[in-house]
Image (cartoon, rainbow, N blue to C red; front, side, top):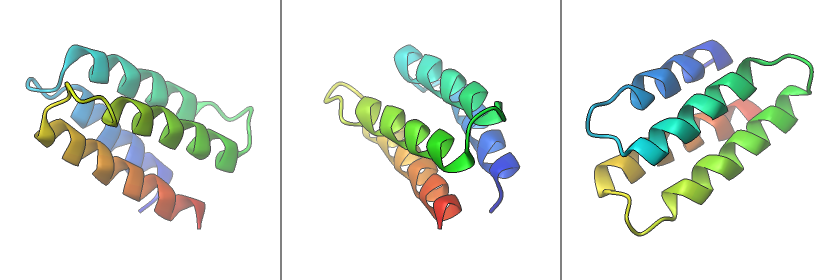
Length: 81
């Protein structure tokens, strides 16, 4: 999977009606950061993973949202390798 597809997946997830508002905001920021090319790709991916992990650890996030976030994290980690 390439970066463009991961960003599309993040955008789709951020538009999910059942996704909590706080998660949507974080995902939109992450997508924008990943699109910036003034930083190294590894730095952008690491930052994105950190931010998504942080929000996924919230006990108030529904399980379906956590699963979607973990899936995105997995895709991002695969890009780093």
